[in-house]
Image (cartoon, rainbow, N blue to C red):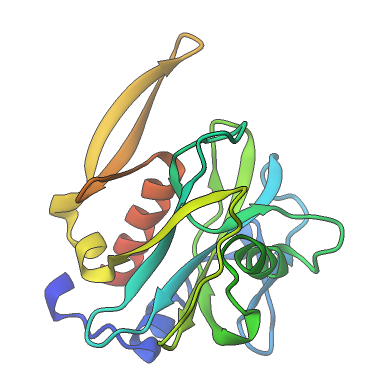
Length: 207
């Protein structure tokens, strides 16, 4: 049961240990099990990475989320994880996730202890997103990039783990019906790829 799961870093690390396999497009390091980069033959898509940052409030960590600014070309005003495209300067998607978190919300990569990752997530906009789960000991201060980030907030991990908070909706894009998850938290509407990755996280941790 989700309510009985101890949400400490070691339990979460164990739960995440086998969550992203090479067939999901992420190669695991033989020494540490740390995700180090895309594997040859991974599904097509523009490589991107996000950080699912867990602020270690006890007994219920908070998941870091951002509200994007309204003027952006892609996903304006939507809720998302810190993240973005994997660039040539990045040593794989793990490095991209940490770099983007630093650029978008001012999170020092040295404060992030990576616990593992989730299966790669393909978006309808053509991205192959590699989600990395990291632990951040509180207190933590953020410095949002005003161009990209309108707000930074946290959602309690136990709220996300509760399947009663996962709702399915659908929309039609280009004549094709797409179903997706929605997680409503207060006035926030978390949906699409971000909600999908949160639901995957919940299933991995409670499975």
